[in-house]
Length: 179
Image (cartoon, rainbow, N blue to C red; front, top):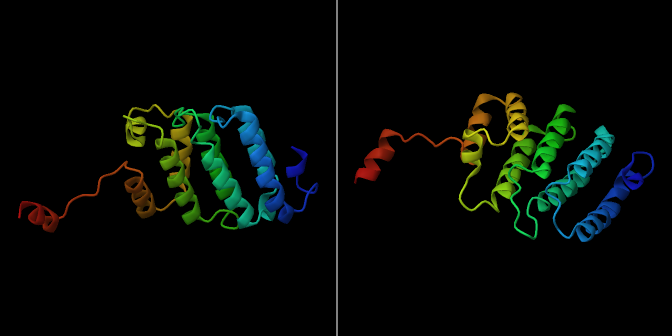
């Protein structure tokens, strides 16, 4: 993918090039990219070569388009797919560069968006179901890797947001339910 290589293009020009690239990929794929692991791995490696030169606007454009790949036109599940795995891997790699590319809050927010997008085509099973049954495999390992870099309070908040933890009821909540 020469147009995305650092040095072959100005990082700011990616704001113009990337939407065209994503449109072509969407058209060629017929809107179903969930299991195209070689493509996602290659794209991730290319994106990661930009390291600290990647502006947040380009990062956000990549995230927005990647999340769209979670919802294929044919309704295929993306919960255990390559699109999910490589996206979380990409987020973890970006966060390893420090706050310059992906601050912790953005990491957690984007990963919550990934859970929502992956859950969109699930009819009967939730993210929590897949997590608790260990059906996510390497995806779960990537989420656990992400959570290790986060303070316990933020980790707990993230787990609640994605449905892995239920908030404990206080005595006041219980009294209000009984009333």
